[in-house]
Image (cartoon, rainbow, N blue to C red; front, side, top):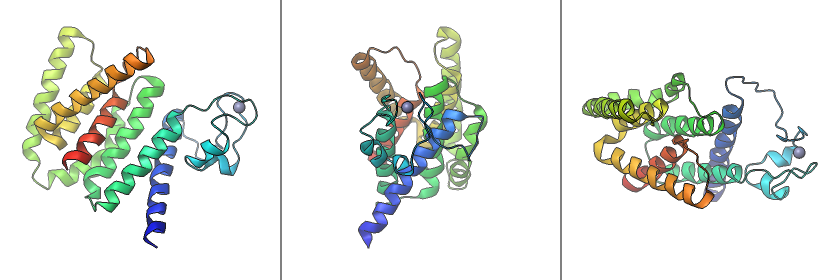
Length: 223
Ligand SMILES: [Zn+2]
């Protein structure tokens, strides 16, 4: 019974991530009735191809009609999403503190990945977490968030190479995680960004996906 419960949590987590990927891909044009299809030939996917992770394995990573490769990022993020939700349930973590922020970070990561910018309005997804934090003595962190924001905006004026979305998101995370952990988050994000630059030789400066990965790592290690 327990394993069945875990399987449901895992499937739910990976399905949520899969859903957020699709919505971020189409944003702001959201059509929930739209059937998922191949990006290349637009063939509608069959029901079993929609199952998180397994669908990718069934079709051997390529469209059954036109053989276009399905990016590995989809099953990998579904796997990470499933594992993440499973971990917070098994370890009985505070869902208010992490789930809304996690959903926001995942959504913004894909949006940043697809379009290279994010809408500030989407920060509202994490509102339940911030309300919870506000009523549980995180007021001091508000000052830290404001300081981090001011420093980064000043750096942005000087060098003009940090995205405004990145600055806002880092400041928001600083409110939750405090000064020490936000510095660790930025450091790990920079290291993974450099690693992916060296291994892929792609000059991608879309930083939010890296921030999301490093926030997940710091959260699971230190909270
Ligand atoms: Zn196709």
